[in-house]
Length: 396
Image (tube, rainbow, N blue to C red; front, side):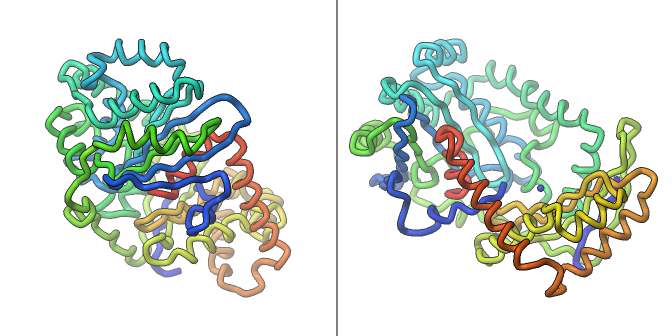
């Protein structure tokens, strides 16, 4: 516990089936000749289909000159392309097909998705194909969208703890902070050019760096030939982007770093403590252990919750781990009782120093944590239109 970061002022549910060769009975996975993986998830509960494309891109591919541009690219996806000449026409086609759409950018993936009537699936796949393969990055649309994306940044800045979170990230990740900062940098976003969008496209937007998921009231025997017909001529890259543009490793934390941020808008003090946790490339088993341990600590019966919450020392204490391919963070958030700030902080550290003790938690708490994870996993599958995001997260 010596290599830590402490500062003043946590998506995890193991999709074990996807990590194994044997998929669930309603999953059908094919790989096209160009390397595009096509996953069909059959669920006939409602006559809808969700189409999602995920690309291995995101903050982890960005240096300081590109920080935030994976997110901007995501926004430009929903603009003009070879087959749809403007954003207005894009939205018109969305209405014609009855599409509900969105996209997200995180540290290690960018995903684009929409849900529509299963009767419009073929047209929906064609719509997705045009957007993913043939964006135009029109200068006028770029000029309009840059401040929109920056506006999301500004709204995040209104959080009284924003500066704490940003400084925490810089201390946690050092020179590679940008690769854990999908929101980006103001200057980079506002000065972004079509040329930089093309650079991102030419590095990462290939079928052999992507997966197409079609889920809902669909038949895999029909979907796979559709995907082959529409996406089959998408030209693959002749290189591995992560060999040509390798992701640098995050330097281990050295010693203990403390800092303080102040905000006149903060209503209560907040502590954050961070550790570098395991990742899926180097220690997959420990990523599961980190998930389970965090669920042990969240139980009301845990020693941590009893000593901090039940005693009134703290208003909230959370321990979370985020599964990543590149160094998953372990983060602790403590909101102390304003009348007992030092006592709450000291008690938290007392517990952290006991975490290696074999009797810190009970067998019953361990089993409860595993059950809670299984329940969360089951809940995530209730709506297929949402579950696809979980699937693509683990694929990436």
